[in-house]
Image (tube, rainbow, N blue to C red):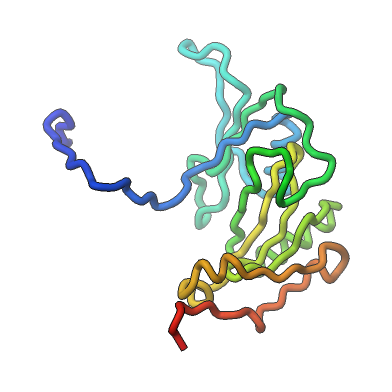
Length: 200
């Protein structure tokens, strides 16, 4: 075991670049309503919940959720905290201009087939598709949760398609239908490949 008292940590010249986001915590108006959305529609699994203890006799209503990590649970990817003071969500979700602090939350599906299956499942449950687009690095569906938060369901395109020019891939978009059978069609053969300036 390392004696932490004797360790000396060198101070870096700049912030350490993180490996990514670890988890997201959302304030929600009604915990049961949001629990149903994130488990029954989005497929997350509840892995924990705050309980009263001697140190914390009146904890907030808070639950923790995991996605599928190669068949295993994560301590949590998402947590929900009930906050009845939240305002009512906008009547119509919009990608831009909505009075929400969070623009949208992107959820990764493991592959194209899983993404297509999830879109078909959501459509069968009557979930309104707010926006369907192909981006240069993902194919995406946007919906909204019961609190008005935008939720993007994506699958990543292969790195070879977008890593040569990430900015170019981020700026490319192809709008697609949001209703009927056309909303479930996913074309992959005509995806552009983004190369760094000067590359052939």
